[in-house]
Image (cartoon, rainbow, N blue to C red; front, side):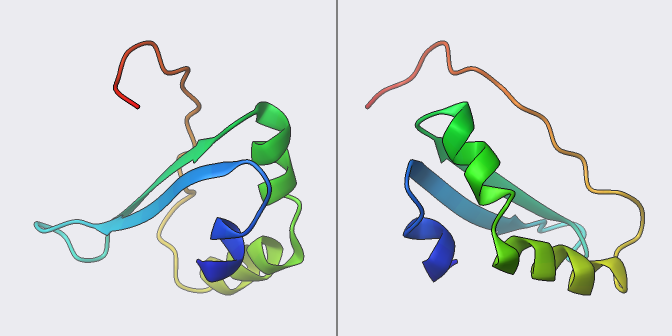
Length: 73
């Protein structure tokens, strides 16, 4: 996480673990632009994480992109 938080364009990067199912995780990420998001997914440490994650995951991760339409700064 420290490396991710230093990436250009990262606003928020928070990892959550399910209370009901400790094997479930949710990563909430916010970026200033799609380019910042794409940069994050091109980093060697994220690629290494996905390679390590392959051996323990149960199914494919679900990645959904959203546009913020309301909130507070």
